[in-house]
Length: 431
Ligand code: AOS
Ligand code: ZN
Ligand code: ZN
Ligand code: ZN
Image 1 (cartoon, rainbow, N blue to C red):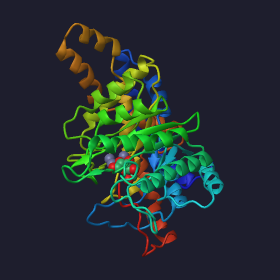
Image 2: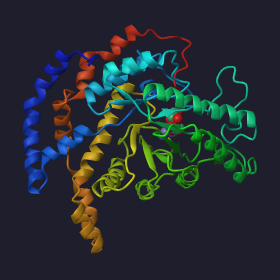
Image 3: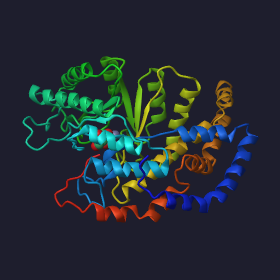
């Protein structure tokens, strides 16, 4: 497999840390053994865990006020893929990429697929974009896309989604994620029911174009860019739409798309129960769709979500197999560093959730022992599983300390030279 980080450097950096890691791992192994947990089983599962990287996450994001591009940012999808390869090489847990059209401009899909294959990267969910007009676009999305009152705009949005499915097929992807910014800014501006009917009718057309082995994921979001009403504002509308459209349509949960304090883990449980959980966009937030690094603010919430996911896995819940992906905006960090860090934080939540003694928890639940039930979760959350994560990385040839290697390799500096900035580049400002 083609590598972008010098393997001699990676090995030397790992060698420096290996003996400390072995001690920490042995100590944690002993501790877990006292609770009848085999550390090797957990490490093997940690090694299997993967979360996809969004192509747009490799560039500096921005807000509606400004964007401050960073040095050495990728200028096209091929360069984004290069950064995704680095993120995966070092973290060992991001083996797939989710592209966004038409932000990712591709002339030759077979060339792109080949580059991804060489890096050992797969393509997952493809994302359509009908939340902004493209230069020269004939029918505007200013008043909505799939739910626009004007048929010409709706048709354009439908066709774009069908095109995106076709691109995805060329890359070997298996799902389409649809997020639209449709909504209204003024009470009375839009007839709620008619707008939703138009949205559903448009989505039916897209659903018809889904290949048999594909899924379509609907992403809800409470507000923004529409600030009074949004067509798929919450998991209720999302689920209604997904149920209306059929079994290949499921709901996608972006952690930042709910009101503060929403019990997201319970939404996740409901979607699991009715076989409608399509996937996730992981990120963290304090106020709204802040798209901050995963686990940077609410690691316990992220753990509680994984508690539901691992529980479904444990119970062999039928129809369960959500797609995990990051969706973040990096404004003040090196995007590659943030993505490495976030992927590991998501993996960390998964691993901690594996440590919960499910049978003990069910017992506490049945017996209404609220305190012991909550401690069963809290004790797992409080354990530092870093040695497990580092060992899983070491065993697959990734880095014990990914950020140290990334910085030691001087990757960003090298990219600043290799990718001189195009003064006209617009980047992927909106997330
Ligand atoms: C928008 O808020 C959503 O998070 C979507 O997932 C969107 O397509 C993505 O963030 C890129 O803008
Ligand atoms: Zn999202
Ligand atoms: Zn978000
Ligand atoms: Zn978002």
